[in-house]
Length: 299
Image 1 (cartoon, rainbow, N blue to C red):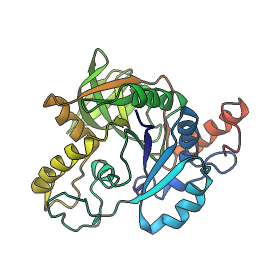
Image 2: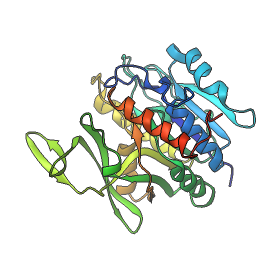
Image 3: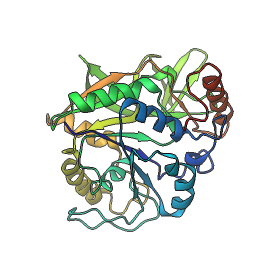
Image 4: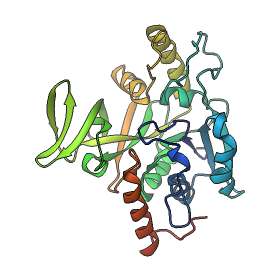
């Protein structure tokens, strides 16, 4: 089986955070969250990295992130714009200001990704264990009918500074049965709740949630194209509609075309959903260096 690649989704602009958080320096020596993910991925065995970015910050991104990666790792940059052409799509993509979401971000990588691959968000810290589990899966178990995901315990993925959205997973025997996007999730004194309309609904603390860490065979690209065509037909005049990865995964599972294996990480997830999260993450990264979890600088 060929060595897998890692696709890092970094084209989002971080609207709630209020800036380009992918390039925010949070570590003791100016490390970004992506620096830690790259370090963990390369240590786990990944030798090919594909960054999905925007042309508007290409130079800044390369200077602060890509150029640090050592020469023995292959690095590519792919652009996700609202008008990025999808080869062989066979459907007109209407122009708009906002890109089409995470499913679209994977589609723009088809020309450079020819092997099994993992997908992560640029602004999430996943922990070492997740990359080790995913690399093992992609080099031993992935296939045209077997994809993977690293899941996290809900209580390890929350922000103290506001609501979050999470894909809440239903699993059986290590396989994903269903994934439901829940918005406005927040921890209260009496538990973790999500809001639906005017009602609050309790979620178990240890609910398995997706943090957008996926493992795919190359065969996912035709599936993505077929479903993106349908999505465009249904949302042609919807300027804010997004083509999310869980939409595709759910359809593939329900149609019986794919089984999705859920690997559960015991690590704490960290991210900067809100500006106020920055101080927390900076302290965590500082503690990592003090206890020897990471050598500083990481490169």
